[in-house]
Length: 209
Image (cartoon, rainbow, N blue to C red; front, side, top):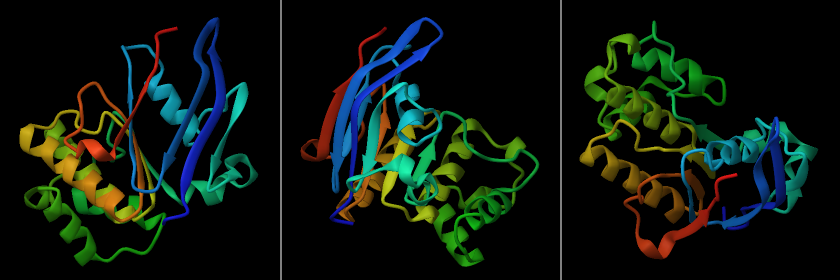
């Protein structure tokens, strides 16, 4: 993964009359964690959604490994995992069923891999429970298991420690450390500092519009 690099140049985006992103630029290289910080309403979530192609900016461009992502969005999406505020889980399915269908849309995944990922994130005990019966923290741990299973170089995370206790926050820190040690990139919108070695962290602060 050593050649991977995510760059954004001069991103501008409006929501109605609100100029949410105003000339935002960033560079995140293999082995780096970029923390996106700012007050509520500063555009952190909007920036992440723009970076992954869910929103198109009015100006500017985003490149992955030197190539404009708009040239082949499908190929770019195959290289990234986006985890938003809400876990992408179906309430009427179990943890295992959710991961089998969610990850199965991207790659082949075995039951043993699913169980191993759930154990790694502390969700092994709820693997057969319906998502609607889980706490918010348990849902987050199941979603984190999905992140591990996707096995992609780029993680875009929106408040990844939401609803997690101290041990869960440490888990997220370890997962991010492992991702970047393997040459991946993590861009995370955060209100609180991630539990990651300071030398790996970069910071981008957004100002409120």
